[in-house]
Image (tube, rainbow, N blue to C red; front, side, top):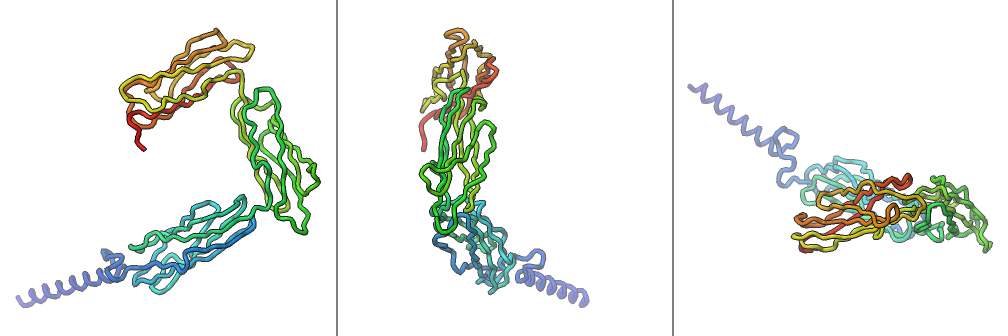
Length: 345
């Protein structure tokens, strides 16, 4: 009997010791990762770095330091930045009490200009500071500029040509002569020619011509300008209009009550010499329906668009798809939108 009692006592003692070890040592399975009084504490020495003014194209680097001022191990579980042009890498991800980790941050200023703010956030196991923010800010001075900064052709009739001009300027100056070229772009229907500036100043003038070969619809291209300072990108965009035109170009039902049908009328006109048939009109949502009827056969159609009663409350966005037998504009898209029911901000 004494042996039985002795074995029970020893078992209870071992179990109690094991539980005590688990509550202290987080490495023992079943133990707490951060017992009371042994939590990590993330402290940043200086959370804001102002780099002042830097020339565009330069790499801005800075090292932030996160110290573990707690009694438990501090884990850095990840580092996120507010922009793809900024990166941050910690030297340590498992930091002992009293130790620190350096986070080297790099900001690529290519194609940036003006006042810039970048946020770097370290995710940690500090229960009181799980997201540790750090900020890098300053002003990026542009070295090369295009005037205008982008080329908007607007709406150009199919088969027509249009030309725009931009001037490339050196904003830095100095003893090094400014050189421009080569210049390239992607679309074969946009021609770019580099010429000397008429005012004799350093830089270049670019003539951008929209060719007759550009198909009907919207277009978007980018002119890549190489210089001996930094590269420059100039966006080129617009719309080539065909024989078929929609008026209005989109359907707005506005703010409407839920319990009634709302009807809008749009016009499809054909300005070409060939007659065009509307083959089908469909909607991206069943609560909006549309039909087409000829006003002038082959030349003009009336489209009746109806927002049906019983449409669920809230914001509604969608598109009408108009199919025709025109080989160049076989499909036309007309966006529509509405706010159904009482407006809520």
